[in-house]
Image (cartoon, rainbow, N blue to C red; front, side):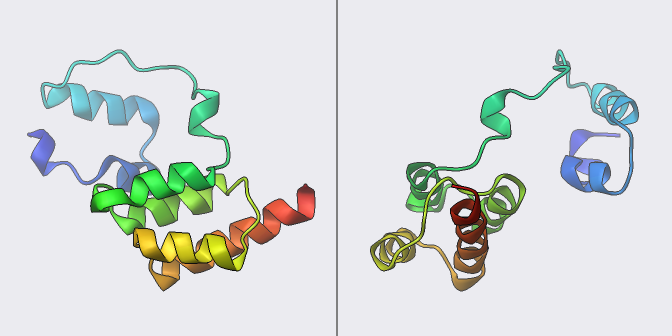
Length: 111
């Protein structure tokens, strides 16, 4: 099996493939790495406005990926009209904007 034949790693995790089996599949494909036992704080903390704008710049990161990150991690800012305009100008579509609105409302309730 080659790495190209593996489904997306995230899809495997969501399908219930345990981490040990996932590592085994990746190694069988010839990819050698040292898995980390824990996530860094940067991988779990809420996204700032500047982080989201950076992800959207130039379309380097697909909007669906940014959407997933917002849903998983939330945001650390309140959304106002000017901020919405900046996000739209950076390329945020309506699906992503709704996720950001929801996450921003959650942030506002706790801060």
